[in-house]
Amino acid sequence: MKEIIDKLVSNPLVGKLLIAAAAIIVIALITRLFRRSVNRFVKDPDARYYTRKFVSFIGYIIVVLAISLIFSNYLGGLTVALGVAGAGIAFALQEVIASFAGWFAISFAEFYKVGDRVQLGGIKGDVIDVGILRTTLMEIGEWVSGDLYSGRVVRIANSFVFKEPVFNYSGDFPFLWDEIVVPVKYGNDHKMARQIIEKVSDEVLSDYAEKAQDAWSKLVASYRIEDAAVKPMITLVANDNWLEFTLRYVVNYKKRRGTKDILFTRIIEEFDKTEGRVGIASMTVHLVETPTFDVRVRKEDKDDNSKNQL
Figure: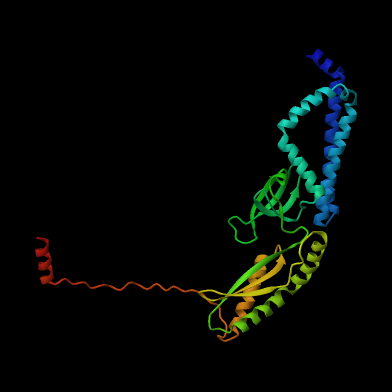
């Protein structure tokens, strides 16, 4: 046993392996120490996140450089073997390689960034982390109505950016077009109804319209796209049941549900002030209990039926 230990100790390769292991441990400890220090000294959440990512990335680079220096004498003879092994590894790990390429594209081609709301791989959510192999989302929707968190954290391979469309809700234009439909009864004052909806939209959506116009102008300057109207627009359609007003507007991508709540609340409040001149239309079906049927059969009719059967 002692002879085996002596041979291992005297073997230069074993010594280099021990040195490499010690170097990796030391670098990992220093990297972790720096990451914890970032949490104490950097208060801004975005700056803290990117600083921790940068520290980890520098740690990986130092590990690779350290291993290269330690085993520099052996790298020349291993070139051919590494080339053959590399081809097999590339085939076996093609998904991993594609995910790494996806991370490179995400980082430098601006597919999305941390904090964006995206739909990736059929999953919609907010990007909370972009790793070398996977993107982490806080899921939105599913069994929860509206653009609200479901509570599930989803990790998606970065390779999906090459396989499926990437929908970014907050990229170059952090606004969305949305609509609400307001049904008004036939016979009501439709001109007053339009005026009320216009008044409420001006109160609630004026700030969005100004900010959206600036963002849209920058988008038009960057891409070949028409100069669409971003101000609220009201249209009227008369159907079989009621007059249907549709309010189309732009809204912050994170405030769709809250904005709808404010709009409907204010419109209903203003309709109530008209004292019946304008009201929300609805279809009501009232089901009543079926009355009791009193059926009596006379004896003569019963005898006649018996004769007919004979």
